[in-house]
Length: 320
Image 1 (cartoon, rainbow, N blue to C red):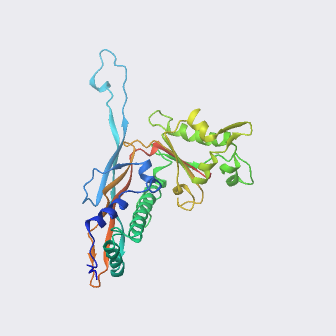
Image 2 (cartoon, rainbow, N blue to C red):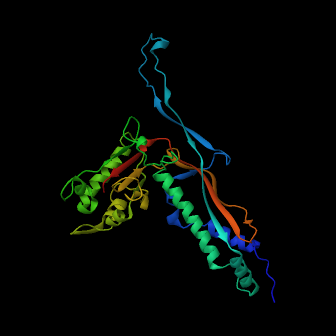
C-alpha cells in the first residue's frame, strides 16, 4: 500500500503552477497591451511620484544694440503628482483530501498535477488581471485611485478632451442619435476624425491607438455602404487614420466604465506619455500549511496605477 505525504508539493507541481500563473491569456492583458509597464520604482515603495511639465518661453529676433533684458528665456511649467501603491491579492487553497488525490495520481504514474489545481491558478491570475485592468481604466473611488477615465484629466488647459460625440444619427433624442448603430459609416468616421484631430492638433502627439467596446468594434466590420463591400475596419487600415492598434475592450462599456454610456478612446500611448506603474509584478507566495493539512498560497501584485504625464494626448468620445 502506497504511503502519501499529504500537504507537500513537489518542485514539478510548483513549476506547473508557476507556468500557468505567469502565462496569461492575451485578452486578460488588456491594460498591458495598451500601456507599457513602468517597473523602475522600488518593489518596496508604498508611494510613487512623477513630474509633468509644459515647455514655456519663446525666441525672438535680437536687434543690434539690445541688452540682456531683451532676451526671452525658456523654462518649464508643471508640477509633481504622487500616487499610493496598492497590493492586489487573491489566494489559492488546497485541502488535505485534494493533496492526497494529487499524490495518488503521482503514485499511479498519472502526472504531478490535477486539473483542479491548474484551474484555480488560472482563476487567480484572471482575477488579478481584471482588477489591474479596472484600476488602469476606471480607477477606484474608495481608495482614491485614478484611472485614465478620471474626469480630472480632461477639459481644461493642457488637459485631454472627454465629450459627447455628435448627435448626428437617427433616432428620437440626442442620446439615440449619438449611438453608432444609428449612424452611417461616414458619420462614425466623422466621430473618429474629430478624435484624431483633437489629439494631433498641435503636432505634439500621434493618435496611435483606438479602443472601443466589443459591440461597436464589431460595427466596424459592417460594409461601408450597400455598394462598397469594404468594411470600416478595412478603410481605417488602408485608406486613412492608420491606427497602430484597434482594440476591443469591455472596459469601455457603460457597465464597466463608471458612466451611463459607452466610450471610445483615441490615445498616444507612447511610454513618455502614459504608462502603468508596476512596483512588483504578479508573483506566487510561499505555501502555508495549517494544522489540518490545508495548503494556502497567496497570489499578489503591487501597482501604482496609471502614470499619465500628458493628458492632452487622450480623447474620449462618449455615447456611442
